[in-house]
Image 1: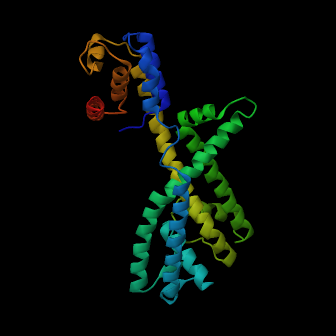
Image 2: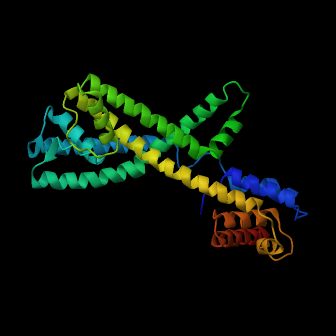
Image 3: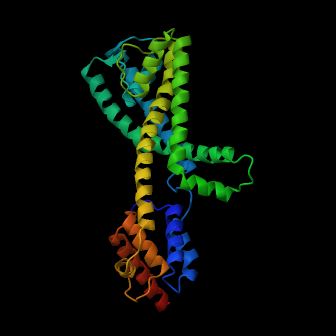
Length: 320
């Protein structure tokens, strides 16, 4: 089932008000609107998700670092500190940056690295993505508050605006994160790693996009400590940035189609198709369901399943 926003439901109900096709419509307006909108906060993003993600990440890096530390003699390349090198190698492997400054040289180390990179990709995509979304949600509210700092706007209005323009705010915030992390990485490499500006910027871009050519990498102890945190944050933020960019483009096309659906002239056949119970009256719920189906938000299979569920509840109520 596609995502249904408050804006979609409100626009459909306003269109229904203008059409005035159902006499018994007004009483159903508020109930229908609230039932379709639901909670304005995404239930999948709670503080527990962030905490669980951090715990899993710490355990994953801890176990991986311990294993690669035991196999430190089977890893070749630019070594500095055994435990730090193991942690650095874990981060570079799980984010698929793969500079090549540290590489497994034995069969056991290669098999462990191969396993670690796949589990690391799954961890980054599924678990850390939820934590990143939770952080973005919090920053959305702060961003909206900042834009209305001189206005008397309540929490309900802020949450409504966040929900309406959620993808747009996510895109802007992730863009800011990418810019900040790019500047931070470039400056750090200029100061600590003594790179030239072009080389520093080039290494940052190769890292955050996970290209990892290997001709430039962190070669100091402090640099690798910085890299452990910076690589994790920057690669996740870049991934979320491109994800929200794609969502923003999709949303733009969806909004154009939704506008066409809501502004085109209705025909008798449209109203007849919306009359789900064949009682010759199109109620608010029926009109909303029909328009949402036309927008591609839901399917008739979804509507049928929900109606069957409602009828079962009605039977239980009568029996009681």
